[in-house]
Amino acid sequence: MLWWHVHRRLYDWTLAWAYKPFASLALFVLSFSESIIFPVPPDVLLIPLVLGNRKKWLKYAFLCSLSSVLGAIAAYLIGWLAWPWIDEFVFRWFAWAKLTPEYFAIAQEELGKELSIVFWSVATVGFTPLPFKVINIAAGIVGTGVQNPGRFVAVFLFAATASRSARFFLVAGLIRLFGAKITPFIDKYFNWLSLLFAALLVGGFVVIKYVL
Image (cartoon, rainbow, N blue to C red; front, top):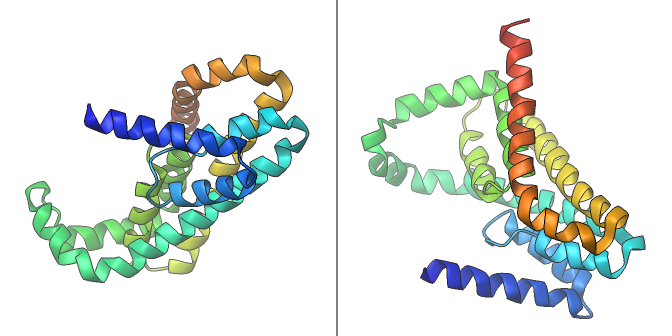
């Protein structure tokens, strides 16, 4: 319950920035930090900004997408640079799950080969309400030992850019077309619909790969 009250206060504090002179800068900072650590999604600020000036919906969507991807890169670097300092702690902490250096090396090797898994993992989390910051840092950790780090990073960046842009341009576009009347629908159903859409999309590619 305490967590909920804290989160609600952060939500209200974030929303208040929509009515201040530096709202665009606040959107950039919020979207950037949400990709790393901040718990409130940037949609909270994006929606009222577009409602306030629907002609600028492309600007706000682009700003939100760009800063989110930059934040994803920063989170990736955190995972990449911090792993040498925390690897022993992680292996000890998750020993119960049989996570050992040997298994981790195998996972790195397999993910380096199956870049489609990396793409769909990042893309799914980036488009849905799942914690984007976690997958960004985890990708940085895994990417420390893959066989082809250049391709791994390229796939990560493409997935992050595609998913974040799709999400924010979709939200801003809906507000541009329908105005305030679409806001309750987005608040109530968007997260569930995005999860369903991602599940259907991934499931469709799995069927194509293994059935057809």
